[in-house]
Length: 315
Image (cartoon, rainbow, N blue to C red; front, side, top):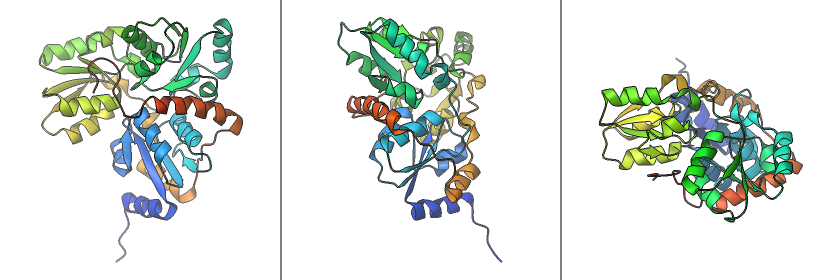
């Protein structure tokens, strides 16, 4: 009797044959996280992409993440298992919009959140992630104006932490703005002993209720080190799978179940397998764009030799 091989078995065989690595963001569904060689936040995965000796990179995230891997790995094949997995925030500012901002503020340095298109990165001085945005802004000359794009909520948080007056754009994360202060307040009434962890893409009113403001990687480290037994987690609920798996005996509550990112959930184990079997959905970046974007990413990675959570009480 012929035994049908599981998706995991087939993916494992293909990884070896293709010399492939699978990178998955913390917001991916459980089955995809279980397939991955590395699960992490944008900074951690950018570092993994820069260091890998794999010939094929299967990026389970959204398009800007796969573009980042392609920028850092010219000549390697980068696959995005679902080509429609995109980031709405990244589409809120295009290259023309950034050129217009730069024309209005010609002396300003441009700090570009990694949640952006390759074209926007190419026009920036340095990239950042939510894990290292404070560090990146602090690295810029104190008297130089700074344009921070595209996320106005992360930019607002960085301004609070650094005391710098940042020139912000209108972008935001549609998932994180669904988390409201009243969601946190209601959970705290039921779990007054809970520690509140908030992603810096959340609105200011939510951040003000936080015990910890951190990237998803920072939340993972905080949950491991904290003596708290109950946590309210204000970010995309996909992170809770990893938090619960790595911290048995601790309880993790989503601040809002409405904060799901539908684009992050588009990728499935079956799509990962199909992309690897067919070598489908390659993500490429033109050389004229890649050069400038690589410079901005390299500067970010130089400033982030060690992964770190962003902001106060980050680990």
